[in-house]
Length: 128
Image (cartoon, rainbow, N blue to C red; front, side, top):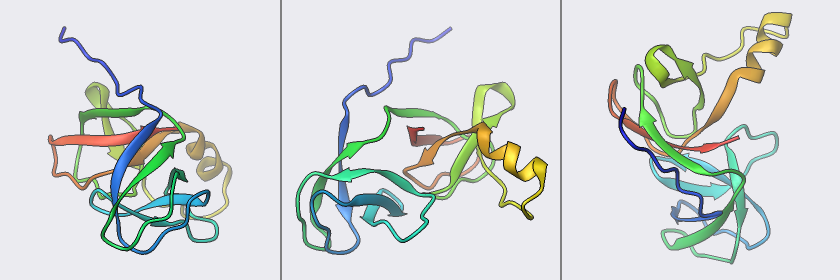
């Protein structure tokens, strides 16, 4: 078994896709980029530490530790992730409605993808 150490730092540095304000919610907006969270966003990964212009690096106080594991299937930055076979992660399929199954499936989400990755590639994510 290989060794693994998660990134326990409670903050991370990301590139902004829009101007951001310190103290507001940060959401994944693209491959390794972040922007202000929209109302009801399911892609929130933390809170901006400072103001920053679009395209600048900014620190985010993350809502959970950052992990890197192998993905199963393609993953897009901002996807909600669930456990997949072999200890991998996979993108959570969109809910088809407000059925009991869809509601219960939401409990299986382990994190939010920070990068876009092909099948069997490393996926970075913030744990929830």
